[in-house]
View 1: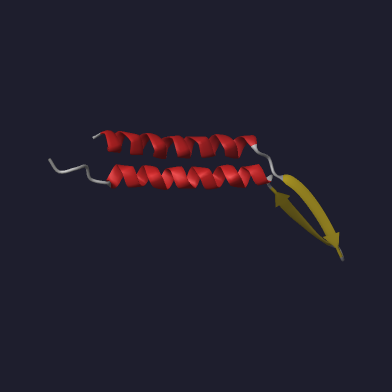
View 2 (view 1 turned 60 degrees about the horizontal axis):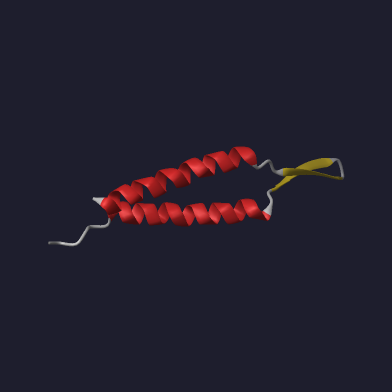
Length: 73
């Protein structure tokens, strides 16, 4: 029962944290014009990707805890 609660907490906190981080970090726009063709390149800071990797790991861990079975007594 405790593993399931921890799993739910980890999963929801990872999702909500991702949504908050996604609204806070704005990508840097880089406009490149070559032969009349304009290309917009969006670059995120490296910390954004680090946070995303940590959130993915915690989400997977939460799903694991949610679906794992406890000890048989």
